[in-house]
Length: 283
Image (cartoon, rainbow, N blue to C red; front, top):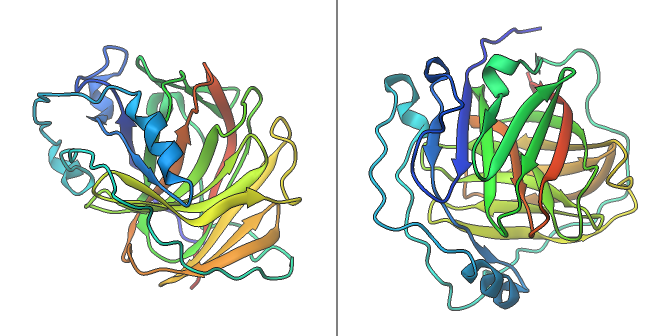
């Protein structure tokens, strides 16, 4: 199986553009600020909640590190939508066996020197070879980071628990984070729903597959696996090895980095404990 050299890219939603003092500069974190406008069939309610968060103003431009230029873009000004985005039709396939087995082409071994990070909004800390990824509770703000190698197609999977979440608190698996800073992710919530989201370069969060309940999810304090099988514009979604949905979409193509996203609905110290991140090539 192929082995890859890993470079970690931190991309965090903050309330001000600054570099945290807790980070070793040699790790080259990239700090940015964004607020998402949520576009779903229930967008009006979500936008009201987003407006309670004060967006940053008069931000200083961020100078990218030379080897991270493709992962950086200055945040755009959030735009209020005039109407919800259309939700494309999706299939509801029968449950099936998981799509991949055997030794993965990539497996993350969480390392403190790469993953430990803290600021006013997020705590990312390796404990006992697992990543504790904690949103400190700013409502409707999302924090994400991704890792190389860049991939387009393949099967991506993560294993995790959410020990202290509530309601619509959300954790997701990110793929194809591009140089334009748009990406896809499959997410799950504390109230046992799942969906598929497109995060746009204009700071809009569009739920392409509306979040809905599924019996494939275990309770949030128990272990769950979520996976995406991506091949060009076709995507299949797996929860604990069961196929729960699929869709075709063309907005983000080409290679990109992959990793995690978290969004608190207001729960203080909403924590996701991540034990695995894996990737299998389609080759």
